[in-house]
Amino acid sequence: MSALPGRVAGLLAGRATDASYAAGWALVRALPEGTARALFEAGADLAHRRGGKGVARLRSNLARVVGTDGTELDALTRDALRSYARYWREVFRLPVTPRQVLLDGMLALHEDRMRAAVKSGRGVVFALPHTGNWDQAGAWFVANGVPFTTVAERLEPASLYDRFVAFRESLGMEVLPLTGGDRPAYDVLVERLEAGRALCLLADRDLTPRGVDVTFFGATARMPAGPASLALRTGAALVPVHLAFRPDGWQVEFFEEVPASDVPTMTQAMADAFADGIARYPADWHMLQRLWLDDLAPNDPRKAPQP
Image (cartoon, rainbow, N blue to C red):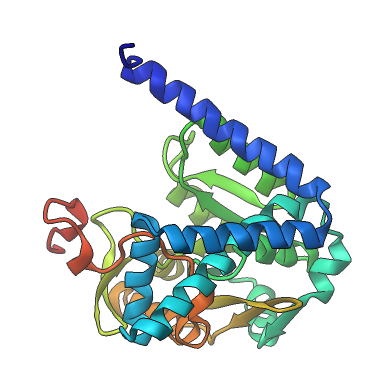
């Protein structure tokens, strides 16, 4: 039998992906909490045993944080996969998680820094890495009376992207598309900050060649210029944030506001804050993609020298 034409095969694969996420949302909400936890942890352990490119990349990234000791690194990789599985399990259950559970389950470290930045009226950019459960933290922000705007990378198929946007908007977030919106996302973010509002931006991985080179765990990585650029343009506060899991809940830590200077210096300060949190909670860093420049393929456009 001949292969399906690429376009048709891609469409069917996209529909299958969207359907699988829809089924996951419905199924996991219906399962008892203990059953869902055991199921997702078993899936993480199976992924760890089977390996694969994503698991190998996660292991390689974690080696930058803790070193290459085989036994320790293997256990950490397993724990990181369990943490990532917990993220998805909680995301699927988040729409039916009571507001009080979100509030009572969060340990907020240096919450006064967050409150001061919000109350200043200057606008605030909360920049965070892919750690812990950023969707849960977003719901916690909203439940604490801190609505915010964020940006989402477009997913394929479009129906899957729409599903995630609807999910996040149902939690009280304003979600802008990274590309293809009615207006450039950057311009809208500037307006939000000038109105004294808050942004939450994932900022430990740049998807373009236009990022800022930073030293991150001893090697050069590239992180987005947006958080620092937005803060400088509008006078908003730039506050790095780190998220982690606790056995019975979650943790959010607010770092000190990054002093205004220039984009490279401020981005490096943001990266240093991320590294501090990740070094203390490496299992909760869900980075399954290439991050450091010396890991990128030779023809990757992100490897091009910065102007």
